[in-house]
Image 1 (tube, rainbow, N blue to C red):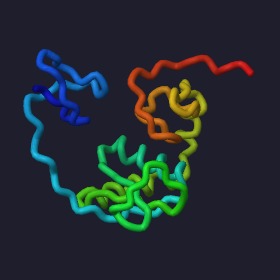
Image 2: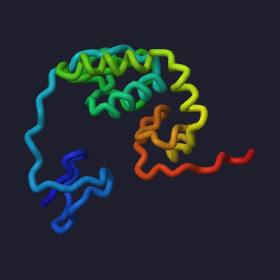
Image 3: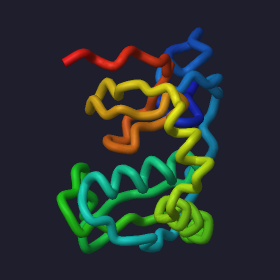
Length: 152
């Protein structure tokens, strides 16, 4: 049986691509890596958590959310949530966090002002058309095509 190397889903024989991840399937999954997790930061609520996790995800950095301990993972954190990353990704994750906190440059603001936007199907947030994940809810975009702004 083939497997998706990204989401680990198992498929029936004869299927060659993952329907969710759009990658070639493999015959066998590699052994799971054992990670030692460390706290990257404390996020102040669901939106902060999702924005940080979306940025980490774009860089290929695994992360999990928890309350006070690693074994109390919550799906929709309310406040004071810890974001954990594997130790080997900690420095890279800290750089991602710094970039999120940095003020955008004038050039970046000008680029964003002229950028086409789309709406997230999951939460309705307006996001850049080239976004991979929604910074509001963390939903992954598959085919991003610009859409007209809704009329009120």
